[in-house]
Every structure is written in structure tokens, then in C-alpha cells.
Image 1 (cartoon, rainbow, N blue to C red):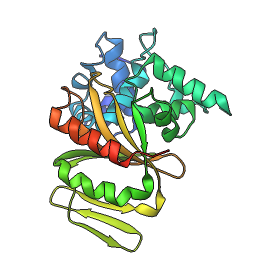
Image 2 (cartoon, one colour):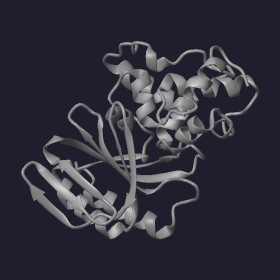
Image 3 (cartoon, rainbow, N blue to C red):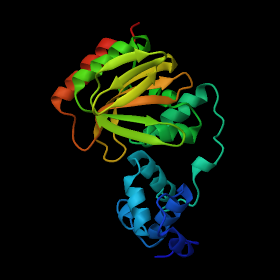
Image 4 (cartoon, helix red, strand yellow):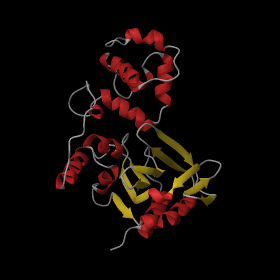
Length: 259
């Protein structure tokens, strides 16, 4: 396996327990240069400790790194990342037009990634999803909605900031309020929500970024349009079970913005 500057990196890295984005991308680019496809790349990178590190980072971040090398456009390899470029300024009507054009090209694309590339708040990407894919909810009823999540059973919760994505699988419940925080503290979930920062909420039904199978989620955003947290009833892999779809639709219709 070879790649620009990578052979000289393997020695110092073979005992490392954490890696930078540049090191991970260099390792992925090395296997891509050897003709290894995107799906097999995470299992072929070297050294083994880097391979284990890549396998254990959250899936959205792993996909982001793979996207830096395996372009979804016509070019087989991407030499540079748009994430390192200044976002093209968007104003007025062109914001929604550019977002909708990008969605039409790839409906499976992660909304957080699309927002970064276009330099717009992720909440605006959600608002531009095709009709029926995203329904805005009455965020003033956030507590009532969050408490209803307990009845959904096990769900997939994702929280992302500029540096880290955290995924957790568990059940809502054992609610309490302390100061500015609304707390969810069960055996499987431990969340502390600064509810005063919640400015928008959506029920979202869209194709998953990995396999195109529809996912069902409730998503909350702050005043700047950045995601606060997302609650997935289904996460792709197979079609949503009828009972999950029924529960999702009932909550969506009950909490949707009226008028």
C-alpha cells in the first residue's frame, strides 16, 4: 500500500490511540489509490490501530471522511475537501434554490453535511426538503413532545457539534427539570437539554444516507439553525415497521404547526 507521504507515517502511528482527520484521510486515500472501493476501505486501512479507530468513530463522521476521498460526483477521487474552503455566500431566494438543487441531485445526502457545504443553517436545509419529507412542529410544546418519546421505546439519539457526533441508543423517561435544564435520565439515556435554546422542531422522513431506506426522526434546532438533537425511530437498513410508522405519523400530526 502506498500514498503521498503515508508510508513514512505508519511507523510513528502504529502505537497511537487517536488520529487526526488528516491522518485518517491519508490512510483512506492510500487504499483508494490501490483500487479499493469506498465500502471496503475502512477494513483495509493501515496500521491496524488506525483501522480500529476509524471503525469506532460515529458513522456520520466516518462517512464524512470517506466523502473527502471518494467523491459522489463523476471524479473517482477527491483531491481536496470543500469543508476546507470558505462557503460560497448565499443571500435571499438563492439560498433555498441552491439547497433544493443539491437535494434533487442526492436526496440521501446528510443534511448536516449539505448545510456545511452550502454555508447555510441545517434547519434551512430541513425546511427545503421535498413536500411531506419535513413537517415543522410547534416547538413551544417541546416538553410535551419529548415526554411522549418515552412511549416510542428504544430510539437512536444523535447530538452533533462542530467537532464531535455522539450517538446513543436508549429509551426516554425519568424526566425532571433543574434550572435551565430539562433532564432525561434512564439506564440507557442521560440527557440534559437547555430547553430555552430550542427554536425549531421537525418531523423528518427521508432516505438514509447509506442505503436509501426511509428513516423517521424528530429533530430539534437552536436559534442559529444548528441541530440540538435528533431522535430516530428508524435508522435505515429495512423499511420502518408499521407500528413505528403509525407512532411517528400520530406525533407528527398532533404537534405540527397549524395555520
